[in-house]
Image (cartoon, rainbow, N blue to C red; front, side, top):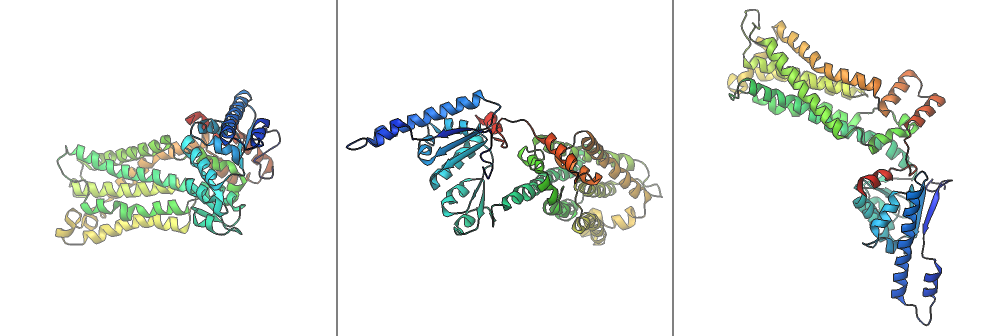
Length: 448
């Protein structure tokens, strides 16, 4: 009860081999029949598992706890019984395997991982937990009096069990958000860049005329857009550690995969295509066939390409500024520095001989910089390309807020420390489930 694996009001299903029939067989004289004992034990375990499954199906609104000892677990993990055992286990709020061997711990972990197709986490502090830690997707080792074997075999090491709370609720939430946002943004920025090239090729009837200079395309993911992504994946925090611990519901965003669902990934991909569409067509229509400079000369392909590339660099970096919620000096340096690097590169590369700089030779100093139309077109295209995301983000925040958005609003309004309001938010985030505090019902419905 101290760790809430068992709670008041829980129905307990106890699987054991202390039945009178098995006890009598074990005490038979002159010598116990081992084959008969094994057969009776297996039959008893199967009957108890079937009875437990019937109880779970009958009392769907109650939380159950399954308690099974090591001797019974031997038969529950046999190939023809393990599916029955797993079906019962995923329908319970807690499963306690007591007096189990190291091999049994590993086998139970493997069974859950392969049977539910869910990410598994194991935590242990001794050498008898090594197999379990290695079998789980994520192994958390506790360094302590039992040695360092568990730590050496784990993916993450903590000093005390109580640190698991911060590991999951704070660093788990931050890591999930950072990685999911970083991957989605990678899709976005490369689609936004790539589709401008595709549209240009279609616009020129696939003549082979390149949209951008070769070095422009080569350095896009190296200097002009890479640093903000690194900052996003390392430093971004939607909610501080204080509120991550205060509102554990934030952790559910990862469990429910809200930030890395196919819907969200496709949404970012669509945003990238929409950005490329706006940048290309607005730039081309604004710069051709009208006169571009004060002499009335029309813009040629290198000028259109350089202007369009400038808009892409501005948009994808400003998109990053809109997407992140935690600004540090490093974020500012990386975002604005990436834009500045583009202009510095355009100056330095354009100053090289034409044999090296090719279409970029003095394109900025002699053509782009002195022309007001370059700045007007760039500003208009950048703002137009960011409007769809800004509108979508505003509607989602106002009408369909996620957990972290609600906490951000509470912090901004000064309600994050209001006990009554915080309790109301917590209660509103609790969903109905028949298995207490776990998500095993999802595994049962999806895989069994």
